[in-house]
Image (cartoon, rainbow, N blue to C red; front, side):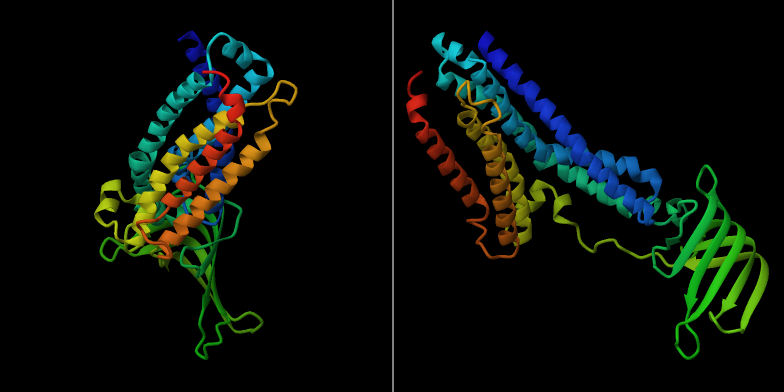
Length: 365
């Protein structure tokens, strides 16, 4: 029991350390992606942290299997190099008991991944979609503006620049707005420019149309290079902002619950999504089984000897899963076969790896 707790602690600590490092690395990539969305005016800054937080459980579902896989290899590899495994085997703690301890850790991790893939992540995906489509994220264009930078409006027909924004991001100072306007001969070279001291966004209560209202400014209309233009001074001028409706007409499969996917399992895309959720869960257990024989190294070989082939095996396995999912979505593979054949090949490979090391594994019980 003491030895089992010791092994569990060693693997768990390594698992958590690897998963945390990978999580921070992948999460930083998502932060950069969302910051780019903010920079181009796709989302406002006030939903940035909320969207980033939704990425954590999604990433954990994919990083926990890898963390467990590498955690077992590194933890057991260190014990082999330090001759701890040899001492444990001499004291009666054989490879079968080592495998039982590893299976116990794998089952707990697999259960966590199962909950994330089957229940938590679909719910998180639905909430993320709601945030991206909410009025808070799509209607208040002024909240997406960054002072000192030229930005295009959501409909792509306006270019805006503001020097300053109020603390609540509701009013702008020193506003520049450019809008291309078609001429009578459809040459498309005429422009309307607005320079104003202040600006804010409002919504028509009846039509729900969005307007960017500028105050105390000048409006210039004309064609570049042609000495024929108008200058109009005004107290208040409103420009209609046509919002692009990027909302999907149907729910994405990632947001559907497992029960909904089961109800329409004959649909290739929904069947692929359901099999993908099960496949990620199954991969956590299979990778843990494979990690146990891969972790066995001789003392003089070094604990990192098997890291390169282990990572290569993982990359191949995951890429084959992605390919199998694409085949199911496109209807190239029957749903009954689906992605299950990839796990069958993995089980065969694990069996071969164990059989190749049978001489070393059969020595102890």
